[in-house]
Length: 378
Ligand code: OSB
Ligand code: MG
Image 1 (cartoon, rainbow, N blue to C red):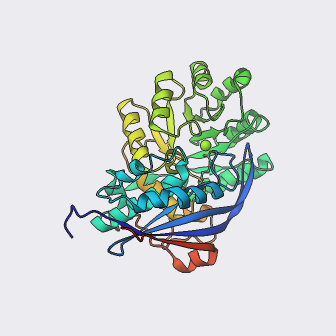
Image 2: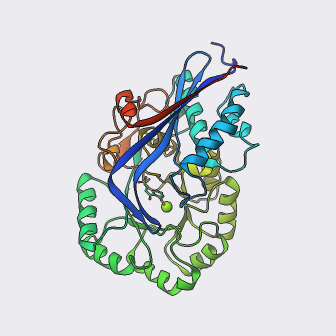
Image 3: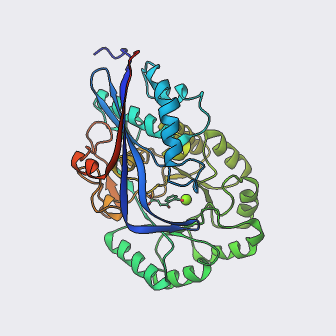
Protein backbone atom coordinates (compact mmCIF):
# COMPACT_ATOMS: atom_id res chain seq x y z
CA UNK A 1 0.00 0.00 0.00
CA UNK A 2 1.59 3.33 -0.99
CA UNK A 3 2.29 5.48 2.07
CA UNK A 4 0.36 8.39 0.60
CA UNK A 5 -2.89 6.51 0.01
CA UNK A 6 -5.46 8.13 2.29
CA UNK A 7 -7.42 6.13 4.82
CA UNK A 8 -11.19 6.21 4.64
CA UNK A 9 -13.14 5.22 7.68
CA UNK A 10 -15.72 2.85 6.21
CA UNK A 11 -17.42 1.73 9.38
CA UNK A 12 -17.84 2.88 12.98
CA UNK A 13 -19.22 0.54 15.63
CA UNK A 14 -20.27 1.83 19.04
CA UNK A 15 -20.18 -0.94 21.65
CA UNK A 16 -21.94 0.26 24.80
CA UNK A 17 -20.71 -1.51 27.93
CA UNK A 18 -21.57 -1.48 31.60
CA UNK A 19 -18.86 -2.69 33.98
CA UNK A 20 -19.05 -2.75 37.77
CA UNK A 21 -15.97 -1.53 39.65
CA UNK A 22 -14.68 -3.98 42.28
CA UNK A 23 -15.04 -1.20 44.85
CA UNK A 24 -17.17 1.95 44.80
CA UNK A 25 -15.13 5.12 44.14
CA UNK A 26 -15.92 8.22 46.22
CA UNK A 27 -14.81 11.78 45.50
CA UNK A 28 -15.85 15.14 47.01
CA UNK A 29 -18.78 14.90 44.54
CA UNK A 30 -20.22 11.52 45.43
CA UNK A 31 -19.88 7.79 44.95
CA UNK A 32 -19.62 5.89 41.71
CA UNK A 33 -19.58 2.17 40.93
CA UNK A 34 -21.09 1.33 37.55
CA UNK A 35 -19.01 2.39 34.58
CA UNK A 36 -21.21 2.97 31.51
CA UNK A 37 -19.21 3.82 28.38
CA UNK A 38 -18.49 3.13 24.71
CA UNK A 39 -15.78 1.16 23.03
CA UNK A 40 -15.47 2.82 19.63
CA UNK A 41 -14.36 0.55 16.78
CA UNK A 42 -13.33 2.14 13.46
CA UNK A 43 -12.62 0.15 10.30
CA UNK A 44 -10.85 1.42 7.17
CA UNK A 45 -11.20 0.44 3.48
CA UNK A 46 -8.73 -2.44 3.98
CA UNK A 47 -10.51 -3.84 7.00
CA UNK A 48 -7.92 -2.58 9.52
CA UNK A 49 -9.55 -1.86 12.89
CA UNK A 50 -8.81 0.70 15.59
CA UNK A 51 -10.25 1.00 19.08
CA UNK A 52 -11.01 3.93 21.37
CA UNK A 53 -12.92 4.36 24.64
CA UNK A 54 -15.24 7.09 25.85
CA UNK A 55 -14.77 8.39 29.39
CA UNK A 56 -17.85 10.54 30.06
CA UNK A 57 -19.76 9.48 33.18
CA UNK A 58 -23.55 8.97 33.45
CA UNK A 59 -23.86 12.38 35.19
CA UNK A 60 -22.06 15.63 34.28
CA UNK A 61 -20.21 16.04 37.60
CA UNK A 62 -16.66 16.03 36.23
CA UNK A 63 -17.23 17.92 32.98
CA UNK A 64 -20.47 18.86 31.23
CA UNK A 65 -20.42 15.67 29.13
CA UNK A 66 -22.39 12.51 29.92
CA UNK A 67 -22.66 9.05 28.36
CA UNK A 68 -25.79 10.22 26.53
CA UNK A 69 -24.34 13.51 25.26
CA UNK A 70 -21.26 11.73 23.97
CA UNK A 71 -23.48 9.22 22.14
CA UNK A 72 -25.49 12.06 20.60
CA UNK A 73 -22.43 14.05 19.55
CA UNK A 74 -20.63 11.03 18.09
CA UNK A 75 -23.70 9.80 16.19
CA UNK A 76 -25.06 13.10 14.91
CA UNK A 77 -21.87 15.06 14.25
CA UNK A 78 -18.52 13.32 14.66
CA UNK A 79 -19.19 10.10 12.75
CA UNK A 80 -20.56 12.05 9.72
CA UNK A 81 -17.45 14.30 9.83
CA UNK A 82 -15.01 11.39 9.99
CA UNK A 83 -16.84 9.64 7.12
CA UNK A 84 -16.30 12.59 4.79
CA UNK A 85 -12.61 13.15 5.59
CA UNK A 86 -9.81 11.27 3.79
CA UNK A 87 -7.03 10.82 6.34
CA UNK A 88 -3.30 10.73 5.76
CA UNK A 89 -2.41 11.41 9.41
CA UNK A 90 -4.39 11.01 12.66
CA UNK A 91 -3.78 14.69 13.51
CA UNK A 92 -6.42 15.41 10.85
CA UNK A 93 -9.13 13.90 13.05
CA UNK A 94 -9.22 16.72 15.60
CA UNK A 95 -8.94 19.16 12.69
CA UNK A 96 -12.01 17.70 10.97
CA UNK A 97 -13.88 17.89 14.33
CA UNK A 98 -13.38 21.65 14.52
CA UNK A 99 -16.99 22.47 13.48
CA UNK A 100 -18.00 20.89 16.82
CA UNK A 101 -17.23 22.97 19.89
CA UNK A 102 -15.98 21.18 23.03
CA UNK A 103 -17.47 17.71 23.63
CA UNK A 104 -13.89 16.62 24.08
CA UNK A 105 -14.66 13.18 25.50
CA UNK A 106 -16.77 12.25 22.49
CA UNK A 107 -14.01 13.52 20.17
CA UNK A 108 -11.22 11.72 22.04
CA UNK A 109 -13.02 8.34 21.85
CA UNK A 110 -13.11 8.43 18.03
CA UNK A 111 -9.74 10.16 17.61
CA UNK A 112 -8.08 7.52 19.79
CA UNK A 113 -9.57 4.73 17.67
CA UNK A 114 -8.14 6.34 14.51
CA UNK A 115 -4.68 6.70 16.11
CA UNK A 116 -4.79 3.00 16.98
CA UNK A 117 -5.81 2.16 13.40
CA UNK A 118 -2.93 4.19 11.93
CA UNK A 119 -0.39 2.65 14.31
CA UNK A 120 -1.65 -0.83 13.37
CA UNK A 121 -1.47 0.02 9.66
CA UNK A 122 2.11 1.23 10.11
CA UNK A 123 3.04 -1.77 12.28
CA UNK A 124 4.22 0.34 15.24
CA UNK A 125 3.10 0.63 18.83
CA UNK A 126 0.85 3.58 19.63
CA UNK A 127 3.52 4.86 22.02
CA UNK A 128 6.05 4.90 19.18
CA UNK A 129 3.55 6.42 16.75
CA UNK A 130 3.07 9.45 19.02
CA UNK A 131 6.80 9.88 19.71
CA UNK A 132 6.98 8.15 23.08
CA UNK A 133 10.40 7.50 24.55
CA UNK A 134 9.71 5.27 27.56
CA UNK A 135 9.18 1.51 27.77
CA UNK A 136 8.04 1.48 31.38
CA UNK A 137 5.43 3.79 32.85
CA UNK A 138 5.48 4.76 36.53
CA UNK A 139 2.01 4.38 37.98
CA UNK A 140 0.42 5.21 41.29
CA UNK A 141 -3.01 4.57 42.68
CA UNK A 142 -5.88 7.01 43.31
CA UNK A 143 -7.80 6.14 46.47
CA UNK A 144 -11.33 7.45 46.96
CA UNK A 145 -12.73 8.84 50.19
CA UNK A 146 -13.18 5.91 52.61
CA UNK A 147 -15.72 5.35 55.35
CA UNK A 148 -13.10 5.49 58.09
CA UNK A 149 -9.43 6.26 58.62
CA UNK A 150 -8.80 2.65 59.68
CA UNK A 151 -10.19 1.46 56.38
CA UNK A 152 -8.12 4.02 54.50
CA UNK A 153 -4.88 2.95 56.22
CA UNK A 154 -5.69 -0.64 55.37
CA UNK A 155 -6.36 0.24 51.70
CA UNK A 156 -3.11 2.23 51.43
CA UNK A 157 -1.16 -0.60 53.00
CA UNK A 158 -2.69 -3.08 50.54
CA UNK A 159 -1.63 -0.98 47.53
CA UNK A 160 1.85 -0.33 48.93
CA UNK A 161 2.26 -4.10 49.39
CA UNK A 162 1.21 -4.58 45.77
CA UNK A 163 4.09 -2.32 44.72
CA UNK A 164 2.47 1.03 43.97
CA UNK A 165 5.01 3.74 44.69
CA UNK A 166 2.75 6.78 44.85
CA UNK A 167 -0.63 7.20 46.45
CA UNK A 168 -3.19 9.88 45.63
CA UNK A 169 -5.88 10.53 48.20
CA UNK A 170 -9.18 12.21 47.46
CA UNK A 171 -9.91 15.03 49.91
CA UNK A 172 -12.76 17.33 50.92
CA UNK A 173 -13.09 19.82 53.82
CA UNK A 174 -14.22 17.14 56.30
CA UNK A 175 -11.62 14.60 55.09
CA UNK A 176 -8.24 16.29 54.88
CA UNK A 177 -5.86 17.48 57.64
CA UNK A 178 -6.92 15.01 60.32
CA UNK A 179 -6.91 12.14 57.83
CA UNK A 180 -3.49 13.19 56.46
CA UNK A 181 -2.02 13.42 59.97
CA UNK A 182 -2.95 9.77 60.53
CA UNK A 183 -1.69 8.70 57.11
CA UNK A 184 1.65 10.44 57.65
CA UNK A 185 1.98 8.79 61.07
CA UNK A 186 1.77 5.38 59.43
CA UNK A 187 3.47 6.17 56.09
CA UNK A 188 5.99 8.94 56.82
CA UNK A 189 8.00 8.52 53.60
CA UNK A 190 5.34 7.41 51.09
CA UNK A 191 5.12 9.66 47.99
CA UNK A 192 1.70 11.15 48.55
CA UNK A 193 -0.57 13.65 46.82
CA UNK A 194 -4.17 14.79 47.23
CA UNK A 195 -7.02 15.60 44.84
CA UNK A 196 -9.91 17.84 45.93
CA UNK A 197 -11.98 17.82 42.73
CA UNK A 198 -12.80 21.51 43.38
CA UNK A 199 -14.04 21.01 46.94
CA UNK A 200 -12.60 24.30 48.30
CA UNK A 201 -12.78 28.06 47.76
CA UNK A 202 -10.19 30.73 48.37
CA UNK A 203 -12.05 31.66 51.57
CA UNK A 204 -10.49 28.52 53.04
CA UNK A 205 -6.96 29.65 52.23
CA UNK A 206 -5.74 29.42 55.84
CA UNK A 207 -7.02 25.88 56.06
CA UNK A 208 -5.49 24.96 52.68
CA UNK A 209 -2.11 26.35 53.79
CA UNK A 210 -2.01 23.63 56.45
CA UNK A 211 -1.66 21.08 53.65
CA UNK A 212 1.96 22.27 53.31
CA UNK A 213 2.72 20.31 56.50
CA UNK A 214 2.25 16.91 54.89
CA UNK A 215 5.07 16.85 52.34
CA UNK A 216 2.70 16.29 49.41
CA UNK A 217 3.95 15.94 45.84
CA UNK A 218 1.08 18.19 44.78
CA UNK A 219 -2.48 19.29 45.47
CA UNK A 220 -4.75 18.55 42.54
CA UNK A 221 -7.61 20.90 41.60
CA UNK A 222 -8.35 22.46 45.01
CA UNK A 223 -10.55 25.26 43.61
CA UNK A 224 -13.25 25.75 40.99
CA UNK A 225 -13.25 23.73 37.78
CA UNK A 226 -13.17 26.87 35.60
CA UNK A 227 -10.84 29.03 37.66
CA UNK A 228 -7.32 30.28 36.92
CA UNK A 229 -7.09 33.46 39.00
CA UNK A 230 -7.85 32.02 42.44
CA UNK A 231 -5.58 29.05 41.82
CA UNK A 232 -2.77 31.54 41.04
CA UNK A 233 -3.50 33.41 44.29
CA UNK A 234 -3.51 30.17 46.23
CA UNK A 235 -0.31 28.91 44.56
CA UNK A 236 1.48 32.12 45.56
CA UNK A 237 0.66 31.30 49.21
CA UNK A 238 1.50 27.59 49.11
CA UNK A 239 4.81 25.76 49.07
CA UNK A 240 3.18 22.58 47.72
CA UNK A 241 2.73 22.65 43.92
CA UNK A 242 -0.82 22.95 42.62
CA UNK A 243 -1.73 20.57 39.79
CA UNK A 244 -4.70 21.39 37.56
CA UNK A 245 -7.07 18.69 36.29
CA UNK A 246 -10.65 19.93 35.63
CA UNK A 247 -9.46 23.41 34.54
CA UNK A 248 -7.47 22.13 31.54
CA UNK A 249 -9.51 21.25 28.44
CA UNK A 250 -7.35 22.81 25.74
CA UNK A 251 -3.86 23.92 24.81
CA UNK A 252 -5.07 27.46 25.40
CA UNK A 253 -6.16 26.59 28.97
CA UNK A 254 -2.66 25.21 29.61
CA UNK A 255 -1.08 28.43 28.29
CA UNK A 256 -3.37 30.51 30.53
CA UNK A 257 -2.59 28.43 33.62
CA UNK A 258 1.15 28.60 33.06
CA UNK A 259 1.16 32.33 32.22
CA UNK A 260 -0.83 33.17 35.35
CA UNK A 261 1.04 30.79 37.65
CA UNK A 262 -2.18 28.92 38.48
CA UNK A 263 -0.29 25.65 38.81
CA UNK A 264 3.19 24.12 38.67
CA UNK A 265 2.08 20.72 37.33
CA UNK A 266 -0.61 19.62 34.85
CA UNK A 267 -2.63 16.41 34.82
CA UNK A 268 -3.37 15.45 31.20
CA UNK A 269 -6.33 13.19 30.45
CA UNK A 270 -7.05 12.27 26.85
CA UNK A 271 -10.82 12.52 27.22
CA UNK A 272 -10.75 15.91 28.88
CA UNK A 273 -8.52 17.50 26.23
CA UNK A 274 -10.16 15.90 23.17
CA UNK A 275 -7.56 13.32 22.26
CA UNK A 276 -3.93 12.56 21.50
CA UNK A 277 -3.19 15.45 19.14
CA UNK A 278 -4.24 18.09 21.70
CA UNK A 279 -2.59 16.16 24.55
CA UNK A 280 0.71 16.16 22.63
CA UNK A 281 0.45 19.93 22.05
CA UNK A 282 -0.08 20.49 25.77
CA UNK A 283 2.74 18.10 26.59
CA UNK A 284 5.17 19.87 24.24
CA UNK A 285 4.23 23.31 25.56
CA UNK A 286 4.66 22.14 29.17
CA UNK A 287 8.05 20.63 28.27
CA UNK A 288 9.21 23.94 26.78
CA UNK A 289 8.08 25.74 29.96
CA UNK A 290 9.54 23.16 32.39
CA UNK A 291 6.09 22.24 33.71
CA UNK A 292 5.98 18.52 34.58
CA UNK A 293 2.88 16.62 33.50
CA UNK A 294 1.38 13.25 34.37
CA UNK A 295 -1.45 11.12 33.07
CA UNK A 296 -4.68 11.06 35.04
CA UNK A 297 -7.37 8.41 34.84
CA UNK A 298 -11.14 8.16 34.46
CA UNK A 299 -11.52 4.63 35.85
CA UNK A 300 -11.03 3.34 32.30
CA UNK A 301 -11.46 -0.17 31.02
CA UNK A 302 -8.60 -1.72 29.09
CA UNK A 303 -8.86 0.17 25.83
CA UNK A 304 -8.80 3.61 27.44
CA UNK A 305 -6.11 2.46 29.86
CA UNK A 306 -3.91 1.32 26.96
CA UNK A 307 -4.25 4.75 25.31
CA UNK A 308 -3.32 6.54 28.55
CA UNK A 309 -0.26 4.34 29.03
CA UNK A 310 0.93 5.07 25.48
CA UNK A 311 0.48 8.80 26.09
CA UNK A 312 2.50 8.60 29.29
CA UNK A 313 5.50 7.31 27.30
CA UNK A 314 6.18 10.92 26.21
CA UNK A 315 9.20 12.36 28.03
CA UNK A 316 7.56 15.21 29.99
CA UNK A 317 5.30 12.72 31.84
CA UNK A 318 7.51 13.06 34.88
CA UNK A 319 5.20 12.14 37.77
CA UNK A 320 3.58 8.68 38.06
CA UNK A 321 0.12 8.40 36.49
CA UNK A 322 -3.21 7.22 37.91
CA UNK A 323 -3.30 4.44 35.30
CA UNK A 324 -3.09 1.51 37.71
CA UNK A 325 -3.32 -2.15 36.68
CA UNK A 326 -6.61 -3.62 35.40
CA UNK A 327 -7.10 -5.68 38.56
CA UNK A 328 -7.24 -2.53 40.72
CA UNK A 329 -10.62 -1.82 39.05
CA UNK A 330 -12.12 -4.91 37.40
CA UNK A 331 -12.77 -8.58 38.08
CA UNK A 332 -12.12 -9.11 34.36
CA UNK A 333 -10.97 -6.40 31.95
CA UNK A 334 -11.93 -6.26 28.25
CA UNK A 335 -8.36 -6.77 27.02
CA UNK A 336 -6.18 -9.89 26.99
CA UNK A 337 -3.56 -9.72 28.46
CA UNK A 338 -4.74 -7.23 31.06
CA UNK A 339 -2.62 -4.28 32.21
CA UNK A 340 -0.31 -5.47 34.97
CA UNK A 341 2.01 -3.57 37.31
CA UNK A 342 5.34 -4.65 38.76
CA UNK A 343 7.40 -2.54 41.17
CA UNK A 344 5.16 0.45 40.52
CA UNK A 345 5.62 0.26 36.75
CA UNK A 346 3.66 -0.93 33.74
CA UNK A 347 5.72 -2.37 30.90
CA UNK A 348 4.42 -1.04 27.57
CA UNK A 349 3.49 -3.64 24.96
CA UNK A 350 5.50 -3.75 21.74
CA UNK A 351 2.72 -4.98 19.44
CA UNK A 352 1.28 -2.59 16.85
CA UNK A 353 -1.36 -0.10 17.98
CA UNK A 354 -2.54 -0.02 21.59
CA UNK A 355 -0.90 -3.43 21.96
CA UNK A 356 -3.60 -5.01 24.11
CA UNK A 357 -5.97 -7.16 22.01
CA UNK A 358 -9.68 -7.00 22.80
CA UNK A 359 -11.04 -9.94 24.77
CA UNK A 360 -14.25 -10.28 22.74
CA UNK A 361 -15.79 -12.77 25.11
CA UNK A 362 -15.40 -10.31 28.01
CA UNK A 363 -16.52 -7.34 25.92
CA UNK A 364 -19.66 -9.13 24.79
CA UNK A 365 -20.44 -10.14 28.35
CA UNK A 366 -20.50 -6.47 29.40
CA UNK A 367 -22.16 -5.15 26.22
CA UNK A 368 -25.67 -3.71 26.52
CA UNK A 369 -25.94 -2.24 23.01
CA UNK A 370 -24.17 -2.26 19.65
CA UNK A 371 -24.74 0.22 16.82
CA UNK A 372 -23.09 0.07 13.41
CA UNK A 373 -22.62 2.99 10.98
CA UNK A 374 -21.54 2.34 7.41
CA UNK A 375 -19.92 4.96 5.20
CA UNK A 376 -21.91 4.79 1.97
CA UNK A 377 -20.31 7.84 0.26
CA UNK A 378 -16.55 7.32 0.57
O1 OSB B 1 -10.16 13.66 39.48
O2 OSB B 1 -8.59 12.45 38.78
C1 OSB B 1 -9.78 12.60 39.04
C2 OSB B 1 -11.67 9.30 38.64
C3 OSB B 1 -12.80 9.74 38.01
C4 OSB B 1 -12.93 11.08 37.74
C5 OSB B 1 -11.96 11.98 38.11
C6 OSB B 1 -10.81 11.54 38.74
C7 OSB B 1 -10.68 10.17 39.04
C8 OSB B 1 -9.54 9.59 39.75
C9 OSB B 1 -9.27 8.13 39.54
O3 OSB B 1 -8.86 10.20 40.53
C10 OSB B 1 -8.27 7.88 38.48
C11 OSB B 1 -8.23 6.43 38.06
O4 OSB B 1 -7.83 5.59 38.86
O5 OSB B 1 -8.61 6.14 36.91
MG1 MG C 1 -8.44 14.89 39.54
